[in-house]
Image (cartoon, rainbow, N blue to C red; front, top):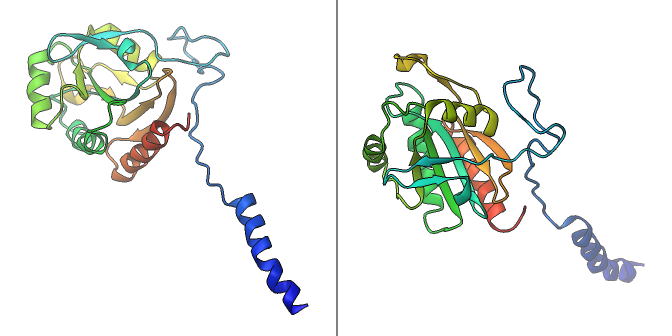
Length: 213
């Protein structure tokens, strides 16, 4: 019996590893059955997968960059403005970490979209990006028409955004970084002011990058 038990140990170990040894990490696909829109602000497709809509904004070199350049790439997106007195500087500092993590990955890019297009011209955004060490071919600072931008934030990326008129303190926007896959689907929201949240973003971006769609 002792000999039989000894011989059974490798078999039991093999069966355990075969059954339980495969690690999986599922990253959700958001809004597969549409987006709840209680106030009717957006033209969401009823009961269908939500995708980022078409858009094109100006980059710091005045070229147009947007949804077309997101195809087949992983894009990390945030909404901010350069004169933001509160959370934006922290968000941009954390986004530096994201850029560093994927500096050599051509399939990962970053969009920081300004909520104050009247002030944030391509020249202003270029200077801001330089202060944060942004690679202009990796980390795109974008600006577009005000109404289009706010509609994109609320109805495209499904995040709150309210213009502050003339007072930066009155702007309302999310601190979230949004992870979008190469098909234009939202895969996650992460606090851009929380180091642990950004660590989770980096981890899940790596998982998407290596084929877990």
